[in-house]
Image (cartoon, rainbow, N blue to C red; front, side, top):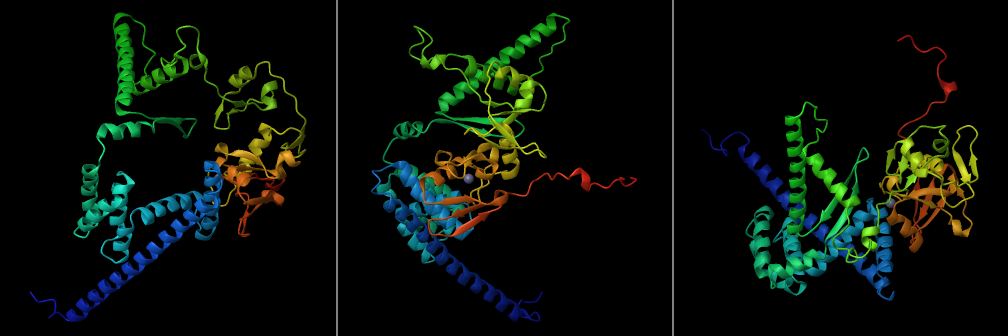
Length: 438
Ligand SMILES: [Zn+2]
C-alpha cells in the first residue's frame, strides 16, 4: 500500500482535485448570484404589470392581460413559452417578496437554491405575516443539511407553527373544490374531481359496491342458467359505467326544487356539439365526424343527431383540392376547419403548442371589422392567446401561405410559419409510371 502523496503524480492529482473543487465553488456562487438576479428581474416584471393595471378598477381580467402581455414579451427574449414565464414570474414574486431572508442567505452562499425552494414550499402554507418568523428558523436548519433532508422537517415545522386548526384550514381548502376535464388520446378524456376526502372516498365506495353487485348478480345468473354471460366488464369498467350513468341521467339531490317539478338543475341534460360535413349528411361521405373538434364519432350517429336541421350556406371550393376556401358566414365550415387543423396543427402564437383541436379558429382581421371567413384570414389560437390578441397591444397580421406575423408591444416581430405537415401528399403526376419491381 502506498500513500496517495507517494504515488507518481499523487500530489499533482490532489492539487487537480482541489482546483476542481475550488472552481465548482466559484461557479456555484456565480450561478447563485445570477439566479437571484433572474428572480429579481422576473419579480420586477410582475410588479410592473400590477402597477400598469392598478388603475383598472381592480379588473381581474385586465390585470391578467397586462401580466400575460409582459410575460409574452419576456418569453420572446428568453425563448420560452409565455405560460412558463408567467408561472415563473409568480414564483419569483413569492420568493423575492415573501422570503427575502432566505434569498439573502442564498446569495451569501449560506444555503442553496434547493433550500430556498423547500422554505418557500413549506412556508407558503402559513399566513403571510408568519413567513419572516418561519424563514428565520428554517434557514438555520437548512445550513446544517441538504435540501432533501430538511424538506420534511420544514413541512412539520410549518404545520406546528400554524395558528389555525386543521378544521379551519380544511374549510378553506374545501372552497377550492372543482371538476376538471382533461382531454386524452383515442377519444378518451379524464374527468377529475377535487373534493373533500370523505366525499371522494364515499363516491368511490358507492361505485365499488354497485360494481360488485353487478358482478355478483352476473355470477349468480351464470350459475343458474345455460346462457353464456356476455357481460365481461371488469370492476374498473363497471365503476366508470355506473359513474357516467348516474351523472348523465340521475337527478341531483342538491336540486331543492326537485320535490315539485323537474327543477332547473334536475332538468338540465348533457349537451355535446357535433360538426357534420355536408357530404356526410347526404350520405355521400361516410367519414367520421367531429365531436366538438375533440374526437371522431361515427357518421350514422352524426346524421341522426343532425336530424331535421337544414342550414344552407354559400361555400367557395378550391376546384383542385376541394377545400372550402371561403364562406359568407362567420361560422367556419367543418371542411375549412379540417384544412386549418391540418395546416396549423397547434395554436399559432409564438412558442405555443396547444393542439388545434383544443383551439378556437380566429379571424386574423376581425370579422366584425370586415375580415372575411377565408383561409387566408383564419388561424387557430388557444383561448389564452385569443384573449391576448383581443385585450392587449400584441398585434398579428396574416401573410401568404398562412404565415403569421406577430408584433409585440415593444415592436419586436415574430414570424410564425405554418407548421410542416406531419403527412405529405404526393401529387399523382409526380409518381413514377412503373413502380419499382419489389
Ligand atoms: Zn396559444
